[in-house]
Length: 216
Image (cartoon, rainbow, N blue to C red; front, side, top):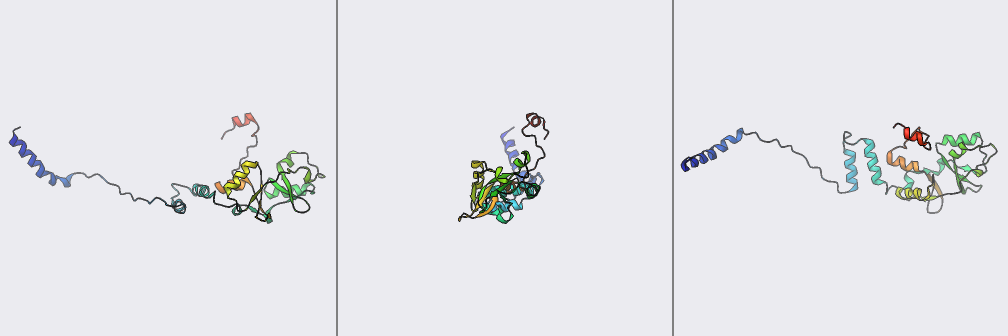
């Protein structure tokens, strides 16, 4: 191609290009609204509350929120308060009436008190069902003398650490003046985190074959 022809073609394309612009297919651009990143824990919790259930269910949102506040929530907020505790006297006979009271309470471990009201141990309902209990037997005979305490202003994280450290099934909650104000169990911590305590009808955890063959 001669130089004059090449020059003509360049000018022609240059002049034609703007006229063809309106006929060209423009790429679709999706406008996405940016959501500001939360700057505080309260803002993040607010985002969780406003998140559609198609993304996070109410249960999932609650679990996330509970986990975030676990180290800040105090024992007093989830404990069983003293008036609702089922105490067992060390001199009580473990007859049908007492056992029925313990079963109906919904708990599996109970604080045992002496004649002055001092806690001297704990009683496990599991032990009572597995042993040959006689009506003439007193609670003192079967109690565990180990008693562990937490203060009502402990964080749940501190209480959880106490459970791990002591391997206790219940903790007695006191105030700064050594007064008993409530009771805390591992199930209460689990319920706070998950919204409920998981239940399972399987009772063969000590059976190696049963566990191996169990269907989920």
